[in-house]
Length: 248
Image (cartoon, rainbow, N blue to C red; front, side, top):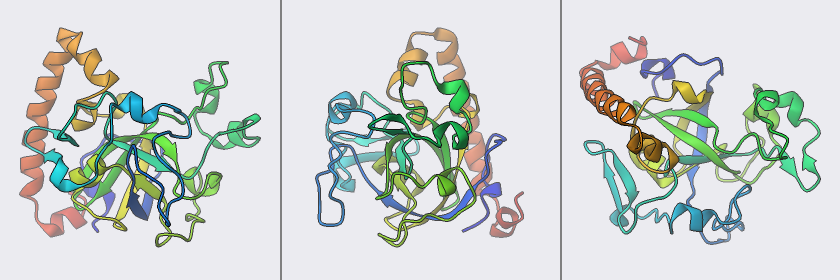
């Protein structure tokens, strides 16, 4: 896998987590022998499946995955939330409130708390890179398997989880399809600020799209970003492997 510096991206103050094993999960996933936790709810949303709009079917036959149109979703409904979502193995909340270390280890904790005792992690943006592609997704659940691995999520340690080949990030079917990868693929990821996230399929559905629809200036900006993305992707495809490895 080439270095993530090969991918066009905004500058970020957060470091890359490199060569992390990924697994696919989805809204509405039922418990299995390898995953005992159902995903009709999330760690922060007791109505996740309902709020999303339905079952985020991971079967490629039942999905739309088109880079030309930016459609990455189930065929049978339009998601009400962003289908580009992920899970990481840390939860800043427990039954008593915030975890004792949360205000110390979460970099944005003090500027994200609003006095309502809500998670400071839900909805945070990440950049995920693999297979010479880069996409953006939001943190919407906790896992795989672990809920307190802050030294990995916010520090420089490797994931403590040993299941599923030591998986350190769960990715949604939309992220999987956009990157063109499969279960257990290695990815690079890092946090980014919301204002660093470019327009793309990850802003096509959910609150982000409603904001664009209600604002003609944002809609015009969206069309311009789509044009720039096509130009960038065409230039990116023409690069040689040597150029990618050199970060050009």
